[in-house]
Image (cartoon, rainbow, N blue to C red; front, side):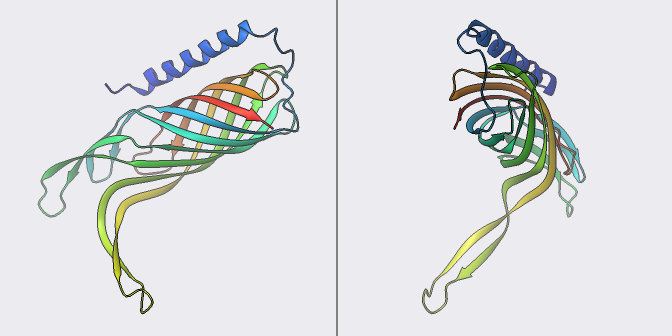
Length: 222
């Protein structure tokens, strides 16, 4: 079942609420989150909401919900400000109705795309302690590959490798993208932290995609 962006956002908000409630039970364990001057690395799970897009020459494009993963690398300038790079991968299924320019007939394509997001994000933690809400904003790029072959190319090695290999050129796109988000952070101890967030993204591409993501993240300070 495909959820609407609003439903996806509600799920992400529920995650944030549950994480905050859990963190509250352990608030007495660690008085302050000493993040200042530390690097951090994290692994994340991303639940990306589906979208219905209207694109030139396409009558309809439906992108399904998808579960993906990602990595984050950040530096904490102090207990409030944090800057770093996040990368995310997912493979959403999609259905698209394409009008054949030669025949004018409608053809339906169902396939799985490959998506990569690279975003430079700044985060602000409202509290200095180990439990804090935060906001983030960032920009970068989004790469989408339809995984549909457009043409074939060949590479020949020459006299030292007298064979030719074929590789496929697919319909793909790399676009500028940016995001804002809100979340909750819990520094469990001096090393391990958890985050839960809701992120709204905008992609400068055909159809103006604006995916919403619910994110759960575990990381390490060093």
